[in-house]
Image (tube, rainbow, N blue to C red; front, side, top):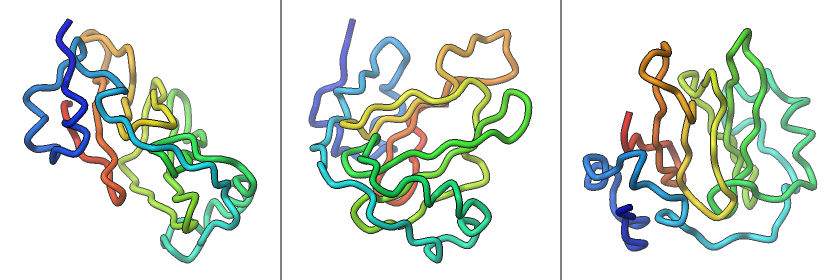
Length: 145
């Protein structure tokens, strides 16, 4: 099995996208240093849609990062076979959300990696695809649809 060099974690996603396949991508290829800090406060004003999920964000206080070194993923249901998620910066409390961030089969991620996989395990016969993304600190960059 071919694995991406660790140095690709710092490579812009557009330079990596044609080289990423399910057989080659590993969380360790996008490794980052972990923060030990916990969420002190969520900045609800940092995203216009965050106010709608105030109670969910409040529940993050005191929790550690679980994604990309110093971020926390937050999930909620949006209907049958639908989950939406947001990303909160543990250090600053800034909320990152996008209405397109929804999945049917959930996501795979690690606390020490910027790689996020949506709909892991999706097969061609399903009405969804597995997506591979790299978090750049502001948005999820598609590596491979």
